[in-house]
Length: 226
Image 1 (cartoon, rainbow, N blue to C red):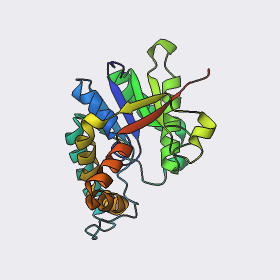
Image 2 (image 1 turned 120 degrees about the vertical axis):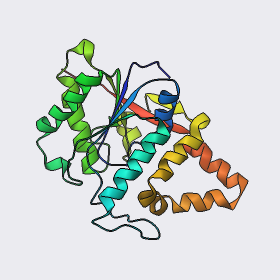
Image 3 (image 1 turned 180 degrees about the vertical axis):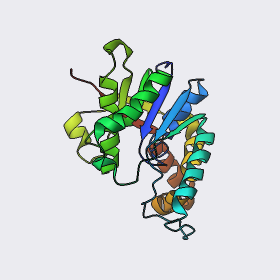
């Protein structure tokens, strides 16, 4: 893992910072690297309301905000910036306007590394839209001031289109922290990862296999072409 001056996370929903990336974030914060998180929305239009249900459409954004704050606490993220965008509508915003908001944070914290979804490989339209805006914001900077962009690619054809990941982190040493951050998003975790939890409870061997699968996190470097 490279030593970084400051890491900036740019994700549209509460839980994006944890699902698939929490281990990498924990490695940075535990190494003493400051981390800032930009969260675009509060995920208020998400379909998961807990399992069993404990949220409704009105309470969900408040619950997810608290879950996000708890995940940040677990991960050691001291600087959380909420953009106040509306869930599932980021793709309809002017990307230059969204980039303005991201650029302001970049100029404030001066990150050496920016982590987001890889544009066009984030599956969810909000993932792709916010990562696109992040690239616009970085491209506005002089080359010598631009952070490196690590993109998470979650489309099925990512490795075919993009090739093998540029960066692979072994996060086995912080797996407990990663799982704690994921579980902090209770309204989402219990519905999305019930099968994983059941598998882990079956036997020590099953738990070991799940943990092995979760112990690697992958990123592709997004290279800006001027």
